[in-house]
Length: 168
Image (cartoon, rainbow, N blue to C red; front, side, top):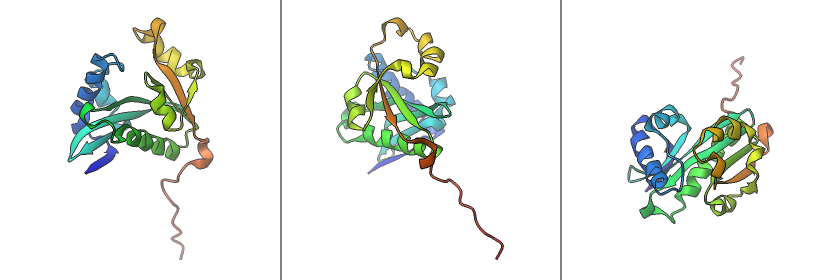
């Protein structure tokens, strides 16, 4: 049985191992385990029989923008739409928060285009470029492609708490 849910502290090591596997191959950037712990509330995981086999996070960049990052699926379970399920879970959070746009920097833009994203210029996201990319060792030779999905923003936000009339 496949379950996609918010990550727990106990998942941090498995998330780190997934990201490290792909980063060692040059398919994504490394994330220190301490960073995984710090951002554990941003992560979604996919589990098969309780074991973490995929992960991804929604990192808030500002009042209208978030980034999907650290999207990784274990090799032996690829092709089961787990990456798409993680992206959809992140997008559900983004909609609930009332965000207008979600972007990703990726080596596999076709995957994101199949999820409804469009190609973008990374300079559409100056807060990413000048706060994070500029510190990356690949800044001057970046091969990642920017993709973005326009969500429509605050008007589509889902209420988290509904008011209850207790006057009667």
